[in-house]
Length: 248
Image 1 (cartoon, rainbow, N blue to C red):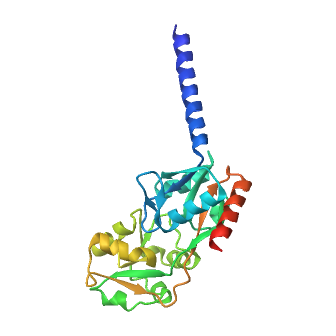
Image 2 (tube, helix red, strand yellow):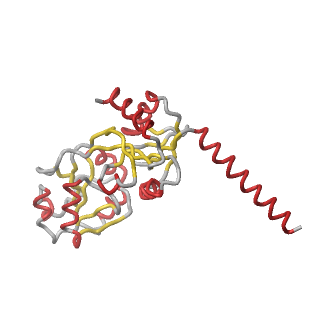
Image 3 (spheres, helix red, strand yellow):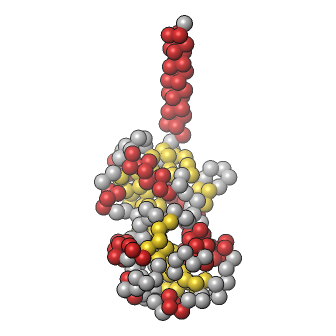
């Protein structure tokens, strides 16, 4: 009797797994994103809007690739792509040599505007630093940086140089702004596209927080569709053709 029950349980699990896998296959290719205005904004119908979400949706439509979107925290997206357990892609990632060892990348789908530095308005010692070069020579200032996040090669090198003066956090930009106001660090960097939105969300004034352009900030980083190695090269090729047709 125990053996029969064990067999029933095993068959139930196997059928459930097969049904689930078939359902995922019928839904199309998975594209992961995390809520981050103005780049990715989830919609009630399961679509993704925002600068990159809207653009990628158009690319997928042009390429004729069945797909669905799934909201996943950014660090978990990276882990899932690296584990390579299924066919999946993630929206808007930077391409780095270490990531190319475990992921496939499309052509770039967007290029960021240059970074801005956010500081407290009451701290002139920080306001005097208007370049990355000046910041890199100022270890007395604490920089806020996102854990596991790439700011591009130039700024990543600066962070490595200042590693003992860097406060890392898993917070998003809104959380980092609150940390800045709370004096957890002296400044952090954010893409120009995001600054007005996060200032509005936290409801700060120009006296509280200032966004400072950096004279030597490099051109914005390219953002790509990053896919697990299980995604066929042919599908990456179709994505690239659609990207070229729409955005080159």
